Image (cartoon, rainbow, N blue to C red; front, side, top):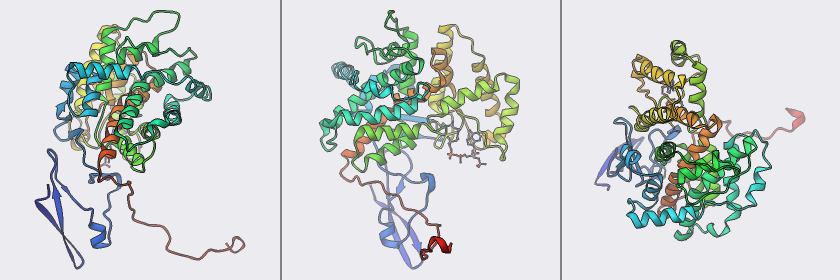
Amino acid sequence: MADRTAKLSIADTDLDLPILSGTMGPDVVDIRKFYAQTDRFTYDPGFTSTASCDSGLTFIDGDKGMLLHRGYPIDQLAEKSSFMEVSYLLLDGELPNKAQLDEFEYTINRHTMVHEQLKTLYNGFRRDAHPMAIMCGVVGALSAFYHDSTDINDPEQRRIASHRLIAKMPTLAAMAYKYSIGQPFLYPDNNLSYAGNFLRMTFGVPAEDYVVDPVIERAMDRIFILHADHEQNASTSTVRLAGSSGANPFACIAAGIACLWGPAHGGANEAALNMLREIGTVDRIPEYIARAKDKNDPFRLMGFGHRVYKNYDPRAKVMAQTATEVLDKLGVSDPVFDVARKLEEIALNDPYFIEKKLYPNVDFYSGIILSAIGFPTTMFTALFALARTVGWVAQWNEMISDPAQKIGRPRQLYTGPTQRDYVPVDKR
Ligand code: CMC
């Protein structure tokens, strides 16, 4: 609440700007009336100092390396909870009791199939299409299948659209994979868990029974939990911005998928494993560390650094532990894991990384686990999108439910030509 103000003087205008406090985290200075009162804009490319909304979903303290969903620490959720439970928590605000969880799982299970006609859409893609290209297309196309979910002012329709998206993402992602390797699509098996069902649709074949390995199923579920939400990151802000115009939710999530694909965001998991493979052996690490520090070289250590975390990303800790469990269980000794461990150790002791507070992020170890399970690198970001869908829909829903919500419309500092007269083509 605003019981204090920040004083700001511009030319001959003195302003008292309200200071708002949340339940945790830094206060914010409310500048909503700034333009009206000063005829000036604030300037903050990349929104490094700007809160774009209020939200009760996720809290990050980047200096402490803290991540909470609805108040619960991510490490506790990753260890003790399930992705379905975390999804319920993000959507509804509280952990479900047993009956609520059963009902939620039942509902999600009942929405896992996709319309048969959607299959024909896959056939339009080249068979070597990147799964994220397919995901952008097919998730956006869901908007054409669900006219009944387009009344975004009806909470019930918003709820159904959210459940559909969470339920169908594993089916769509598995279909993208199957399409790329030329195998038939598998229908969901609703007797399996969310993660187990996804593993079966991805790695099973119609001619054989697929037995879900509980260790891999648990690792998959944990990876989903670790990616479920991350407050106002680029893709979530994209979903909010797209949704702020009243757009169809399926189309908004497709916009989020497009944003997530970039190597500075969700695409970093693919880029991180490619980088670790390129490094290949521990003795080559110093060469890559030197490149990362060289201002004239665009190379960055992928899976390192974060806009918000200036400490160890708590998700990376759980991910490193999960990598050990999965590799042990599968009996895989991947030299890339040794390179990752050593790279982390060297970077964390290097003055450049210490000074800039660059630590491993969630993407640093996730690729090693996903690769050991059998996913090709191109699927990594699709899995991130699958898991992040619950965060996107929860944030979208929170925004639409907020009566103060406005269409997102940033301003700019114009640096183009001033007004000039048109010159006919023969006079230019
Ligand atoms: N390797 C080497 N130097 C780095 C790195 C890195 N990975 N990340 C940041 N820096 C340096 C950067 O050169 C800059 O140096 P200087 O101050 O001398 O110009 C300084 O650290 C600050 O970097 P920045 O780009 O201004 O910071 P940002 O907050 O805009 O960028 C980031 C955050 C995640 C885009 C960046 O750290 C990065 O590109 N990391 C590699 C890609 C990656 O792993 N992304 C996944 C993020 S976590 C998953 C997700 O949420 O999507």
